[in-house]
Image (cartoon, rainbow, N blue to C red; front, side):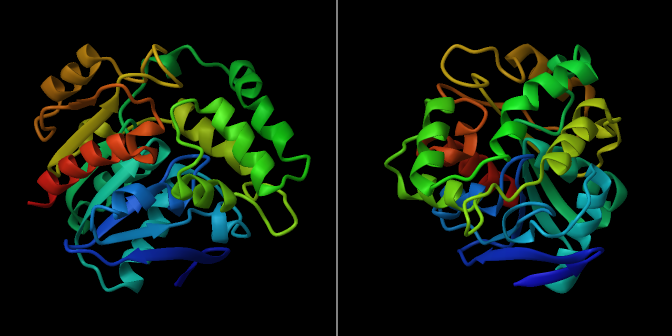
Length: 274
């Protein structure tokens, strides 16, 4: 379905399952297809393509609060007064903003490797961020076949299964019919800057919150976005935060884009739905 928001219509996919509805918010360079693996566990998901992504790629604009306002429009369009919200990576930051500004719309909150301050962000500068995103920006200057794009992504993400049809579906959704990447470079960078340099209001959370984090960041043995010690410190500082759950032997994307990671994330989500 398509939901009117400022600047256009937001694409929203509905996964029918056996649970109350969950609003599922993807990450900075992702799309609604990120939730394919979690949906396979029979969750009822409301999964939007955020503005600038997937079938919402023609909707201009960026910013965590703007995405959160869009999520309210999605809930209103579906007559959903209050739901459990699950956000992965940047989607976690959108979910936190949503929970702080519209707490009455959330029954519970699940954050997947995002939403809480990352230590690496404190050392980031504009110059470092520009350099970090240079390959992604350059990728938007050429055309791709689905096979070419999948091959590159499999190289960059060594833990994904390139033979998994859900992986192919996920990455194919990044491309327009003529082979260009749908997500504009300026939107990608603007959202990344808002996550990294923006002010998180996580300490203001009042809804029951669960936190899932990965052992690695971008492949085996890479430093994680959150260490076990950092996750424990967040739980000690935030009364509404349940005991954090570590997913072993997965990286950031693998928390939801691998069957093993999605199984653990699904267990936590099922707990939150109770």
